[in-house]
Image (cartoon, rainbow, N blue to C red):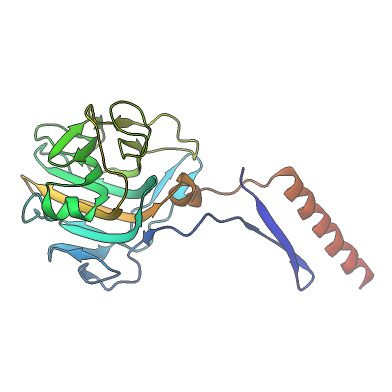
Length: 280
């Protein structure tokens, strides 16, 4: 349940929604000059990754995202599979990591390959160690995105979830430890994502994947990145949030619903204000 916290300020009842913990990484790209993303807000990026005009808005059910005036755009390839096209870091984690962002992708040619992921920086740099969970279009000839779990050099993927080329998507992902299957209970072994949710009650993930051989990686998740291979395509993304819970990356986009007790407080406050005015 979402809560309103109310108090009297200068004789007037003021109510505000409760807030989640501070995210690990948050960026809507509004504060940067248009042009190269590289060097802004901790980002390392290829010169072809730019901040451009026009944010990515999303509205579905009780989730509303105001994309503002700017987004990130690229139409370029990573130098190689081990080098991100763009990346940023956050405090190292040993528990579940959630992320969300808005995405617009041109998949009309069915040839691009790209991965938006969270993972260990060692895995991103060497390609031979660590773990990462990705929302990916990693197969030429398809027109959807899938969940991918990569450990060491081994990658396993779910089936594709189709989407319309250039529609604005809202994507929510989670990399976690479910303790099911061959992996130890404290090892990262599950990646899930939700495509275009309409409520904070996300329900079953759109796609998920867990390795069929044991994962042994337990900590060090500290990087968000994008890798592109095979064929360049138009990619725009915005409204990035990374946190340790669903509330950090989804609930912030909903309008809080007052609980009955909060509504009662509002009513009492209005009566008090009305009584004060009658006595004036």
